[in-house]
Image (cartoon, rainbow, N blue to C red):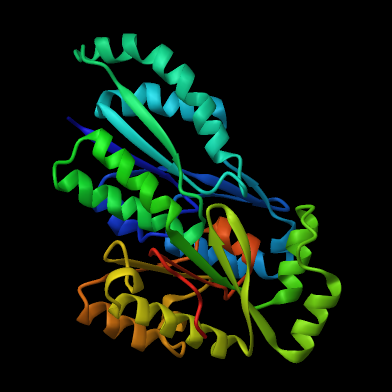
Amino acid sequence: MRIGIVVDSACDLPLDYLQQNDIRLLPVTVRIGQAVLADHRNEQATLQFLHAHLADRGFEAETMPFSVQQIRDLFVSQLSIDYDYVFCMTITKTRSPIYENANQASFAILNDYRPVRSAAGINTPFSLRVIDTLNLFAAQGITAVEAVRLREAGEGPPKIRARLEHIALRTHGYLIPRDLNYLRARTRHRGDRSVSFLSATLGTALDIKPILHCNRGETGPVAKVKGYENAVRKLLEFAARKAAGNGNEGLLTPTVCLSYGGELAELHSLPGYETLRVACRNNNVELFESVMSLTGMVNIGKGALALGFAAEKADFEG
């Protein structure tokens, strides 16, 4: 059976990995004023857009995910021919309409694929499953990488589906914004009052950075640390301990995903990065690094860090 994997472009994985493993994209389009870019995970295009437009007016950006009709058209015209079963994994539905759009499109897809598939000489059924990863940005990459491993191991759709849904519930995403004033402006623009003026002002004045945690679609702070680099070091060293852990203290999949709102050379120079890299290498854990998606950067800000892994226990230890 030909199994396809689809993610939206908020999923932070390197473009070469997506291409090598034939992971298809649902691109998210970002508009800042008159500037428009569809995010196809091209890191150079993302960085150019970041430098030209994001710093000054990024908090005003409008993000436009694939519509129900666009998803339906992609699946019926291409994916229903290329594959027999597709897993479509999306950013958490608590932060984006992509999951709902894909879920609505799935009904039309299953009604409309037969003539197109038959014209291509394929008379077997086509199926798909839309999975809410319950997370965002770097943490979305965890389920996608696991899907690739299971497909390569020759597992069938029922086992893959059960495993991905199990992992999604236990995937932990972490975010560290660099600029709280930007984050406040962005959340207010979106109508989200979760970052108040007072907390943003005090946080900026005192250089206090929150470490945000996302699990099962819910996001909130797990620590407040003085200094961005100190917060990054604490988070990356925590992830290094998880990579080196055993049993319930360790990882459920041999994967850690990192993304950064800027050049990767800047990521590599951050404190704690080398500790995490060595821990992953010594424990046969794959470390994926990518420039953060445009969706991530317009929501969290330039210079933000995102990290994801799957584990039974993830009580943050600073």
